[in-house]
Length: 217
Image 1 (spheres, one colour):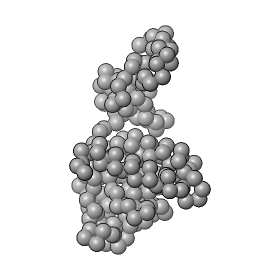
Image 2 (cartoon, one colour; image 1 turned 135 degrees about the horizontal axis):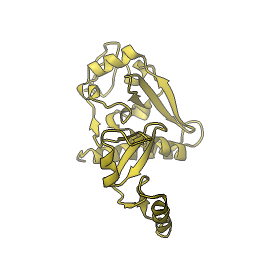
Image 3 (cartoon, helix red, strand yellow; image 1 turned 135 degrees about the vertical axis):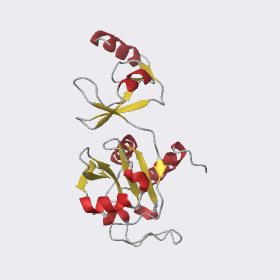
Image 4 (cartoon, rainbow, N blue to C red; image 1 turned 90 degrees about the vertical axis):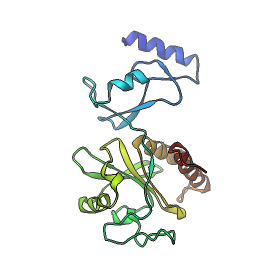
């Protein structure tokens, strides 16, 4: 679409505050729409169905985009940690927490792999997401014990783990879900510990994730 057409589409949306627009062509899109990852900025962009279909191969002229998948999968609680300890699912705990075994110093984080296979953990904070490069041997040990993680697509999917405050959440999700969680924490965090409100909203986030994954209850 021409620059003029995009400007006109944007102006029309400003007259309708609830409208969302495709960030590539400017056309209106429904609330349930596709997302692309701009690989240079590592930001998700909203796309209409037609534009999203153009980037299934991840290429788009001078810019590079990858279409974000919609797979959301709760991972088994019996993942082996890199030191060989087996999770005790019946007791609802793990002898060695998965994130700690990967070297991540917090109980809420997501791990994304780069195109060269490097695994990088990001943990949300009031200032945004902090990066933590995962030991390659530890990551190989984790993926060796979990078949879905061996199919995790670089850049666009993530291992999302939440064990803080007694939670037991382990998911394979599109990376834009993780971006939403980062934004939620930045917006709601209060004081040193975050406050009750942010942790309540994090619980709701994972409840919504289960609904999106098609789980019942």
